[in-house]
Image (cartoon, rainbow, N blue to C red; front, top):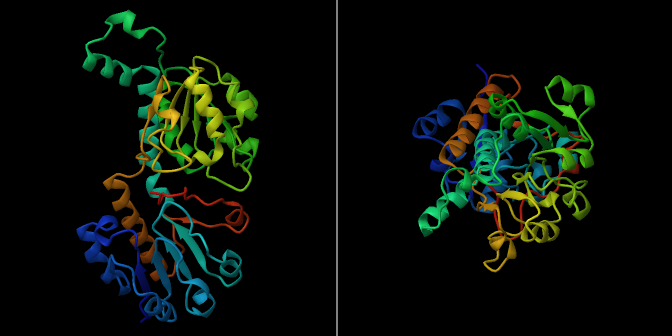
Length: 345
């Protein structure tokens, strides 16, 4: 009989009951031998010692330093945050057969749902209409719809065609949108086979009625959307900043929105919490959300489901299927997905 998998479960700053449903909390010790398995962080020296016997570690971030080099049994590092761990020696992991896995896919559907809702709310002026009703300043019928437009049949540009875009795409299908995408990490033929038209970034910005920023932050795309590109956005368009503010010149975006150049919906900011005095708060035709797109109960429970499903697969001698795996070609190109003063996810 094969020896059971030993797993250090140390998910802080996640709580055990936050990511595991009652049934999954019961399933966890049935699936693997659990070391620790509590919401509070395992004392660091104890955790480093536990790593010496662990086959896998489930953590929110890598806080164990060079203990990695001494953990000779370790073969899997599972992050329950929305990104790959920071401060981890990925080259060592790849050279020594250690898989690094992220629960980022757990947030895909929830973020896509929010993105769709924000797109419709922005184009149809739903928030403004509600606020006008509350203040008693509403306009009825067609007068209240001046400047509004539908999502149906519109040109939609996706900046980044990763997990978020793939979750959003089926939600857009009933609207008959014309989908284009910019993703320098993917080939044109591949994108066409996914049902989207590959285009250059300048064309996407200038021709799309809805622009979704969905790309993972990397060392190559910081402030990719600079003032010149933002100025290409058509006045009857909606710009949706969904993945990370890392990709945008946020000062330029704020100035253009303050001037009323186009509509926007924003869920992420360069610094969180957002400064109460930040001028983006008073920009017209902008919907603001406090990094809420993925932070719903279902997403957190899906983290636990994914972790358990993949631990079960590993225990059965097959590769994990549900979590996202860090790839040698990309891992070192990812930028930090944390923003100053805020813990993501």
